Length: 175
Image 1 (spheres, rainbow, N blue to C red):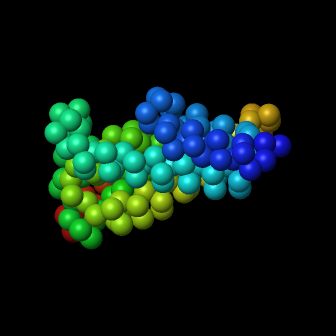
Image 2: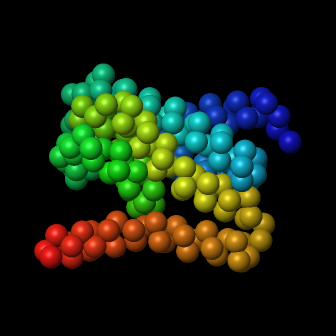
Image 3: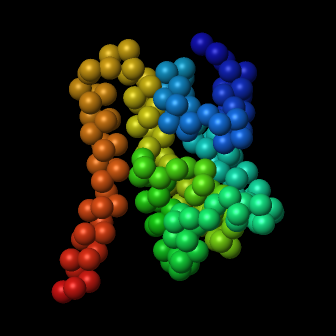
């Protein structure tokens, strides 16, 4: 419907999304509405990887400014990571709907995390959520369908996953 130029414009907007204050969930759903589930997922993931990388590099380049803006639990959590935990933790932070997307990217740029680990963790953690939001957008016309309800249930499970993981971890550390 929108052709190659429409796709390029969409990826361009997705790439600068953090700087024009468009919520990531809105953009992901729009990708599904405009381009369908598969193409929406592909275009959104490209845009997310570009925008996240821009945030990462800006924060690493202008540490002083971003360190003042990002004091808080996300930055502290990222600073405490050991090398082997980076990809897994970024995956969990990205896949969980409750974590703010852009502060994680800025925070990662401030902490000395390798760009490779950041990129892989962002890609793997974003992919399931991007797919689900694109699927949601693609099926928005039939909002009360089984497919739409399944997407909401899976997103809720993603949101609860860190809680279940922490409980599991606490239960098994004590034994």
